[in-house]
Length: 502
Image 1 (tube, rainbow, N blue to C red):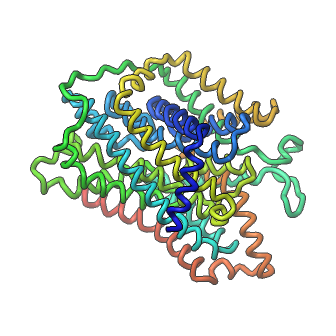
Image 2 (image 1 turned 90 degrees about the vertical axis):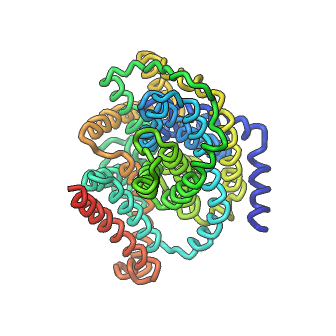
Image 3 (image 1 turned 180 degrees about the horizontal axis):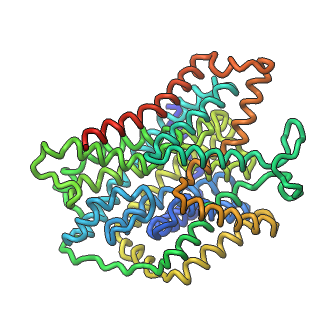
C-alpha cells in the first residue's frame, strides 16, 4: 500500500508537461546515441550532464532526462547490431550473434520488432523490481555505518574488476588511476595540497564532468578520427512482415522472462552492468536449448538468441539504479556518471534519499516506466529513421559532438583551464584505450574516491585508528567474503571452461 502511495506521488511528478517532454526528448536522443556506433550510453549521459545543469533544470527533471537517455541507448544499440552487424553500444554485442543472421534471411523487421518487445519486457520487469525492492534495500542500508560503506565500495571495485574477463589487472590499474584523480586538490581534513603541481586551478580538485567528457567524448572522437569512420549506409533486406507474430512471441516468451529476471539480478550488483548481463543471459539460453532442442540454431538466427540479450541488457541497465539510489554506489559506469550529476545539485544518493527527496526518487521510477512505453512505441515504426542516422558523415559528426562537449564544459565552469584539462584527459584516455584499458573502473574510481576516503577516515576516527572496525560487524564480514568470492570464483570458472574446451 505504501509503495502505491509513493508511485502516485512519482506519477504526479512524471506526468508534469515539462517532465513528459524531457522524457520523450531523452528517449529519442538516447536511441540515436545507441544507434551511432562508438558513442554508447556513458557518452550520451556525460555530454548532457553539463547542458542540463547549465539550463538550470530542476534535479528531478535533469535525472529524468539522463535516465531516459540511458534506457534509450540500450534500446538503440540493437538496431545497427541487427541491420549491419555493428553493435551501437557494448551491451548490444551479443545481439549481433543471431540478430544479423535473421536480417540476412529477410527477417530484419521481425527481428527489430521482437527485440524492441524483449527490451520493453526487460525494462518493465526491472522497473517493477525497483518499485518493490528499492525501499526495502534503502531501509536495510540505513543500518550502514562508515565502515560498512567503505567495505561496500571495496566490494564494488572487486566485482567490477573480476567481471572484466581477461583484463583484471588492467581493470585494477584503471580503478587506481580513477582514485588518484579523485585525490587531487586540498585535503578537507588537513588542508594539505595534493597533486596540484602549484596550479591554483587544481586546488578544488578536477571536476567530475571534465574527467568524464575527456575520457569518453574526446577520446572516442579521436578514436573515430583514427578509424576514419564515415558512416554506413544501411540496406534492410526486403521482408514480407514488419512485425513478429503470436507464434514467435510464444516461442520466445519464457526466454524473455528468464533473461529479464537474470538481467535484473546482475544489474543490482554494483559494477556489473548491462554488457555482463547480456553475455550471461545469452550463454544461459544457449546452454538450456542447444543439444536438447533440434530446432535450436544459436549463432545462425535463433529468435531466442535475439530476445535473451536484449531483455537482459535493458533489465540490467534499469536495475542498476537500485544500488545508486539506495546505497550511493553506482550499479554501472553510466549510473556513476549520473551520481556525479546529482552531486552538482548537492544531492548525495543513498538510503536517506528516499525520505529526504521522495519526489525525485519516485518521479524517476515513474518516468522510467513512461520512457519505456515511449521507447517501445517509438522504436517499432521509426526503425528506418534511426538507421538513417548512420548516413551522417564522420566530418560532420565528430566536430558536432566535440562542439557540444566544449560548450557543455564551458557553460558549467566558465573556465578555459577546464577546457584544456578536458582535452589533455581526452588524449590520455585515447592512449589508455589503445592499450586496452577499461574505462568503467576509472569512472568508478573518480566517483567513489572521495566517498571511500571520507568513510574510511570516519570509521577510523570512531576507534582512534584501530583497523578492526573494518571487519568487526556481520555486514562488513559478509561484504569482505563476497569481495573475495567475486575475485576468486570467476578466474577458476574461466580456467575450468578453458580445460573443457581444450
